[in-house]
Length: 418
Image 1: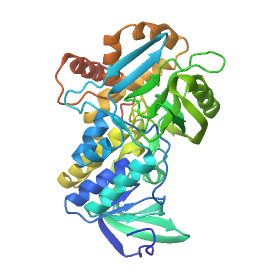
Image 2 (image 1 turned 30 degrees about the horizontal axis):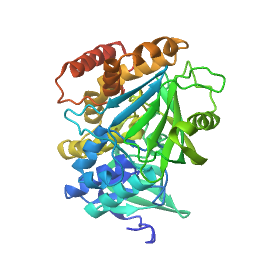
Image 3 (image 1 turned 180 degrees about the vertical axis):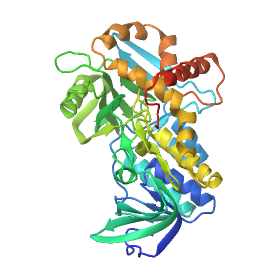
């Protein structure tokens, strides 16, 4: 179904209904359609549409895109070798570690990425519904029987056997199903924009780990510049916060200041375009992520890395994993949160604990310079902070990260996804 076709009628039915056509939802729809299921992929927006994001694709995200046979498409945009880390008087080139993951990354504007992923799902057999906002659910015996939508002022329902909720960080449909976001652990606030750059084809993404405000104070966050290969870069700033230590910073003025400070070095020209900001639940800091025949994935499930704000890789992975689970289990109520904890719980637990420490005043200025003096330590940090440790990795760095994660989970008052 295209946006020009009439809204579905009340008796429209589908095997799998996916609400939200970002990377998580579109990946889930593609995998379900490839499995021979009837799939409907609905979104409140009309595509192509923008999304607040840094646009970076880590090797973990690249691996999932390659699984979807989109590797050539990604490489046709831009390819980067790793991270150029700036801060505390030093600049380090930190290559992507490779291992069981691809040895390259990329950056694709979300307007382009999300539209292509949605188109890929539709080509696989999913039915697309644009401009339809999910506003309620129908329950029968505790199971979702249908979702209520509004489009162009008209209400309609889509009945479903299974429901995948991928409607983003606010997840209005998730809240209807009981989702709750807990702000006692670290969460992110970020802003991004686009600007022309003479270094738009730089083979390294840049991150400034010593993010300073206009008064010279060090903030608990970082700035980034991600080359897009099309004449522009994605530029942005993000800070960490907790319920006890909120982020008292005006993001857009901070982003403008950050851009002005980097104009000469990165050959930035013109004004910042399309500024946007977002609030990010992180590290699985949500509860009620599944029911008998429904599950939350991606940002809706809080699957965002607390140390770098990355969520695309988890969304793509989650879309694949949830379809696998739906094929194996009739009741997802316990199965899905258990699987999320198995895959991400340890890493999220230690990551959000470390992210919480970064919000403590004076800690980052004390530890940052020491970390930047060691290429080895920062290479480890890139791998750990970038979620570049997979279940298959057996090297010492991977074992240490998993060991720390297991012990961190034992200390959690509320483990991830609970």
